[in-house]
Amino acid sequence: MPKTVDSFDFSAQPSVNEQAYRELLRGEYMDKHENVLFIGNSGTGKTHMATALGFSACAQGRRVRFHGVTSLVTELMEARERRCLERLMGQLCRQHLLILDELGYVPFSKAGAELLFDVVSRAYERQSLVVTTNLPFENWVEVMGTERLTGALLDRLTHRVHIIEANGESYRLRHAQKRLRSKKSE
Ligand code: ADP
Ligand code: MG
View 1: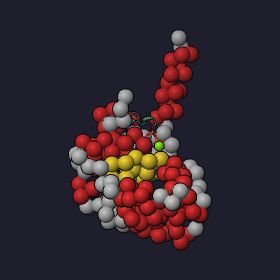
View 2: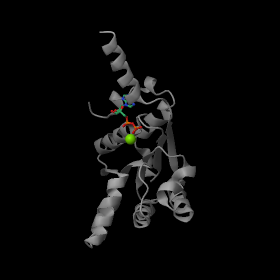
View 3: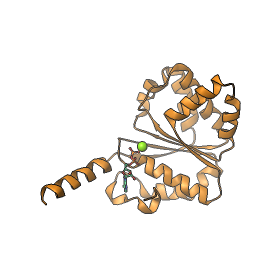
C-alpha cells in the first residue's frame, strides 16, 4: 500500500495534529521555504507522513528528493572523496523539497555532521526540508557531535518550522501484537 495520506489512520495516532498535517499537504510551506519536523518515538508513522508530504508535493509538480539521513551523509562523504561533492550538492539544491528521514539512530562522524550541516545551511530560506527524528532537541548533540554545530543546525532548521509530534504507541508493535493474539485464538 503506498504511504499516502489516504492510507494513514489518524485515529490510530491521536497524538498527531491531523488538521495541522492536512494543512501542510497543501504545500504552501514550500512557497515560503519553511521546514517540517516530525518528532516522536519509533513506529508512530513519521516516515509514512513525511513520504505522503513528498507524494503530494510531487503531485503539485515540485521537485522532491527523499533520503535516509544516514545514507545521504555516507553518499556525501563518498562524493567528496571522488571530488564530485559540488555536483551532488548542486542536485540537492535544485529540489524544492528535501526529505531527510530518520535523524538520530546513528551518530555522525565529525566530517559527516559538517556535511549535513552544509546541506541544511544551503537549504536555509531557499528550499524546504522535511526531517523525521526520534530525538528531542536536547539530544541532537549526541548525533551531531558538538554543541556549536548542533546549535547552528537547529537554528536554521527551526527558524521557520512546522512541528508534528507523533508520540503514541508503535503502530508496528500494536499490529504485530494483534496478529499474535488472533493466531493464539485460532
Ligand atoms: P516511524 O517512521 O515513526 O518509525 P513509520 O512511518 O515507518 O514509523 O511506520 C511504521 C509502519 O506502520 C509503516 O508501515 C507505516 O505505514 C505504518 N503506520 C504507522 N502509523 C500508521 C497509521 N496511523 N496508519 C496507517 N499506517 C501506519
Ligand atoms: Mg521512520
